[in-house]
Length: 275
Length: 306
Ligand SMILES: Nc1ncnc2c1ncn2[C@@H]1O[C@H](COP(=O)(O)OP(=O)(O)OP(=O)(O)O)[C@@H](O)[C@H]1O
Ligand SMILES: [Mg+2]
Image 1 (cartoon, rainbow over the protein chains, first blue to last red):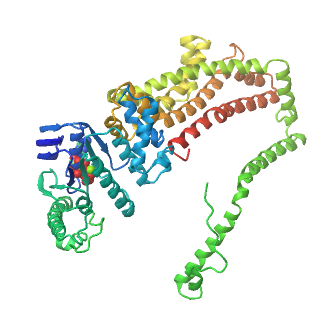
Image 2: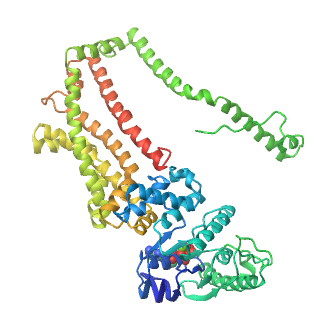
Image 3: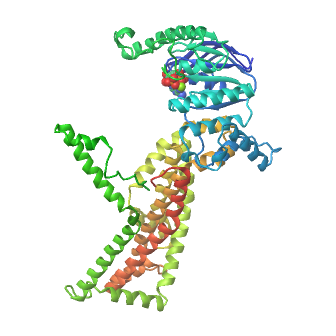
């Protein structure tokens, strides 16, 4: 197992973010975490990354982890190639000379199709390009595990589907273990081997689905995928409704008050059904 | 710089030209919009010439101001000992350069402000970092710093006189107290403004929490804020020095003393001349040293608008 969580709970003072989460992720698997806002997805990722410690349970992570955040969080004082080379410099890898580091960083930039912008500064790039650079910055260290927290959440639909396809290509080539947080059911269906559904806060695992449909995926032609999508959507809507009830504090009804739950397939856009 | 938008052709295919024939209130509004668009077009047509228009306007403004001064002085509305002509001021400046009073005074003042500002820079940086790092320190000493920042630095002078007598140390003390807190607060704000995500990313990439984090992440991240703090600190240091020199006659002659001497001698040309010198030196350092560096860093870091 690349990642093994046993009865993990995380609390911030009185706020219980996640409760009793057990999850075993074999290496090479692409797993998406899906759940309503505030259910502890980012927290869980931070625990796996070692940026946060679990209040309960045990966390076993085998190998190095790299992380990509929703905002690229690039260093504005470094060029793209400087950003990508940052991790190599920090690792203090004495075996690598400066030119070797730059060569590796250039390779990583090529992987995300940003070679032309190696000498640009982050503020000169579009959001999609920054996000690709952040991916390259994580990949250059050749981590065993890639943790991605809504990496495409802030992008427009076209850029987003482009980056999804690129990520899939990279993953198919490198076969890294990926733990991917998203708010988009369709994104999760398009990318993952497995979708883990979390409940409203405190987050617990309420669904664990394996998807063995061949890639590239298209629910319009794949009936099994379409059926899975409806099932997941129903369950997810239920959890979101729970959150909405709690937040609205009154008699809130999904039937009358819910913001448009997208109709079930056959029509499925690659993005859409963003929740 | 603003981009030039393509100017709409006279045969405008834009729907507005069709709606214009209608008589509904909404079409009237559109017609008006169109008028505004035309206005902005013509102003954009003038865009290339703006580059020289601004300095030209400025030059014209100061030239007129100068001319007005000259004319008023020439007509002797006020006697020359109240308002000397620009020529008199020029003569004073030339003579003070020639007789060797001005340059040594400038050097003396420059030495004082360099030492004082240097001490404030080091002290302010250390203090600012300490405040940003320690919550306890920030809640106690930090509040005092915020309060003291609003105290005019010359208020420290009487205290300095009692502690150090009328000495170089007293002047130095006033300069340091004048610029220390501005630098402290700028450094503190710079550290606080670092996005938490930047720190998390740095940690994930192996920057640790020690020297490497400081060198490669924290210091570069606060550089823009630090530079604007440095610039502000300079302005405060210069003002404090002038105030202190005005009040400390018996020390080695600095330019503040020359200004004060002008008053003692009832020599208005000297007073005005020294005001120009003080203004010019303060501006020169700001414009030639601090401003370009601050702007270059802001550009590179992408914090535009500086
Ligand atoms: N450092 C922290 N201190 C206090 N509370 C926190 C902290 N981090 C997270 N929380 C709380 O824990 C809960 C889970 O937060 P988390 O960010 O993990 O949710 P999420 O599932 O990622 O939400 P979203 O989908 O909106 O990103 C939230 O209620 C949040 O307010
Ligand atoms: Mg989150």
